[in-house]
Length: 173
Image 1 (cartoon, rainbow, N blue to C red):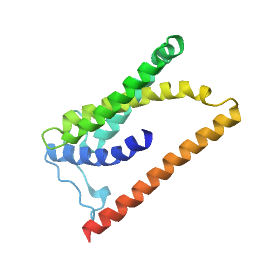
Image 2: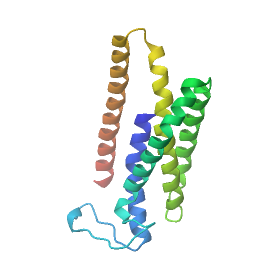
Image 3: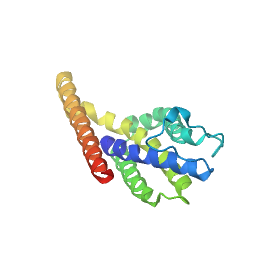
């Protein structure tokens, strides 16, 4: 889920920033234009349009940091770990699918959905981490397992980025 959410987040961030700029009447800089010369003095939801995704990720991280100890306690001291994991992953999947409604009239709703999905995703890491010690008998096995999973995830992200560059280059030609 980490790789999929990261990859969709790349496009979601760009789209939300573009739509936030357009919603307040700021022109969106073209690919040929230097971003350092771009300036928009308007605010959207109390922030500069280019800061909207930063605010979403910061808020999601802050909420998750506050809730992680509580979720961790519930996971460690009850038998709800599997149910919480299933619930968080279901929410993440449904929330990510709902983001297909992204458009000029719905970008604020999608930004809020993105905030919720990121918050729940970060809380899901608590559930995932709780299972790690049970996967392996020794610390060495655990380290190897995590290295393999992380390497596989990053390889997938690299392949995804390469494919997107190829596809976009082909379309623009």
